[in-house]
Length: 275
Image (tube, rainbow, N blue to C red; front, side):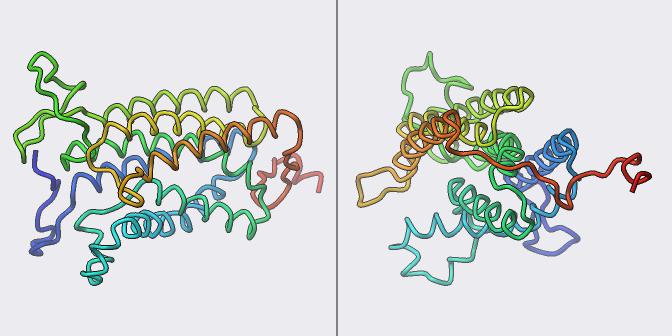
């Protein structure tokens, strides 16, 4: 399959739209839609999600690129002009997540909106975006696992055929997408039960952390620290520990948030009349 959905847009040579970009944009749009619907059910304006996204998108892109460049610095130190060439690939999901969390921190401070309430509102959207985004790896023929030589196991979704090298490899991108889809459903169900603020965040840390720790160990294109430690695997294991600790603190009441009554609360018609 051609990696470009549109080639030479408007007749401009080199102005292409990649399928990966289309997939990421689709995940983003669906995530925003789900976020706004969940916000309204909680009595908050959809502007809450839209205002946050304006800050989150640029910080996520910067974070995704910075994360990748940091752990491939030997290469980029020799070719610094390529640091901003994101159209040539090189974005890391963990960097995007970190950028998104930074955006949530800054936004919650500026808008005086409880941080954990904001995070729990958006966690299902984040997970869905990750589940959808992983399909871009299929188009780009990347993020795959070990070689599969047994003909009986050379079929999708267990394996994926990598055309550039003419081999079948573990479809680790698909494994992660499925895990994210399951986690998405779990967080939606927890959200419907009005779980305490921070519970969805802890669930994400634990669930995604476990899945990524296992799946990262199967991949052949991991970023390494000190040449031996898989960066994403170590970070995933840390997320599991943080998630467990966070869940304990929430359950024991040591972490709690206040009710929100700021500008993003929806004012009902009868309340306006009384005022």
